[in-house]
Amino acid sequence: MPQSRIFSGIQPSGELHIGNYLGAVKNWVSLQRQYESFFCVVDYHAITGPYVPDDLRRRTRDMVVSLLASGVDPSACTLFIQSAVPEHTELAWIFNTITPIGELERQTQFKEKSARQESILAGILNYPVLQAADILLYKANLVPVGEDQVQHLELSREISRRWNAKFDPAYIAALEARSGAAAESAKESSAEDLVGFFPEPKALLTPTRRIMGLDGQAKMSKSLGNTIGLLEEPKDIWEKLRPAVTDPARVRKTDPGTPEICNIYHLHKAFSDPATVEHVAVQCRTAGWGCIDCKKVLFESMDRELTPIRNRAKEIRSDPSVIDEPLARGAEHARDIAGDTMRETKHMMGLT
Ligand code: AMP
Ligand code: TRP
Image (cartoon, rainbow, N blue to C red; front, side):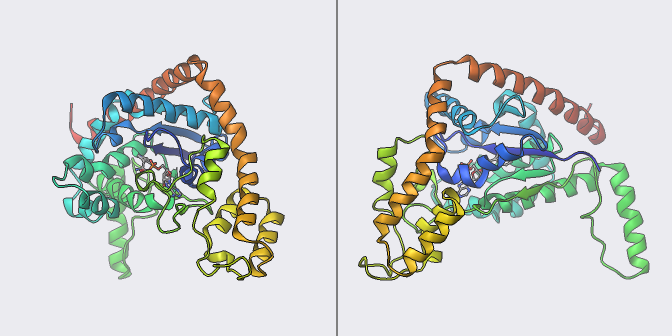
């Protein structure tokens, strides 16, 4: 079994929010020394919606600052910008030629995004194909992401299997041997355990795989305006936390609540120590605390984790070389590996 490689990507939406941080980036940081890791700011994905070029440039840079401040360490991983490695779009084109449109139209994110557009761009439909190319270019088998990406990863696996079954002679031979054996024993054959030229990447999820927005209604998401930014100033964080939705049954301070249905309790589980989480749950159930008391304690826990990150971001911004040098090194390393994968891929496909 080859050594596991990690790949993950994030769109350059500017500042990270705590959903991105808890669902994905914190996991990148804890895994980056355990596996050979590639982390990418996916600007080609970001241009599938309307945007202003100068804003995209600034947002891409700000995202790199947020990642570095969160603890992504370029001496332990490969950090780069997607458009610095042209092989991503080259492999995406190839994968487009083996992907049925129906599978792309079934993607939940496509349905959501296209419902908001009058004229649907082909880039939105093909977005997950580019994502599969991102991952498979590095033959990564593990992908630390939030829950909303699980369906995209399912498609990446499908694309990998389909390409291997069309173009990888060793994989095709193994499939044929397998189906012969399966026919004899009248069993269903499954290709899941066969290792082909491209691996089948799996999602790595955290317990905080789906952070809800402050409205308590939907996933925390920049486009819904229900986020807390990772680098926001404490007073701005408190202004957002104070009115955030809690258990609706707690109308008065004396009403007992149910922590499990309260978004603030779930944020405690992400930011507070276990003893505090336990205490919060008891205070909520017995109406010992009002929701504001509970939020004040959450604010303190968040501040403990986020203040060092915010301070690091300020330091990083004051020294451009801290950003530019690792990105240049990262892109060079990524291009080396991506170039090798493309040479082999094209050869196997009869592209000279
Ligand atoms: P994006 O900003 O859409 O590029 O997302 C970057 C990463 O953050 C992906 O791995 C997402 O799955 C993850 N993510 C985004 N929103 C949330 C959320 N509300 N809860 C948990 N993870 C999230
Ligand atoms: N689609 C992902 C998101 O919106 C971002 C992404 C692009 C990604 N390429 C990737 C995530 C490859 C993991 C692996 O969050």
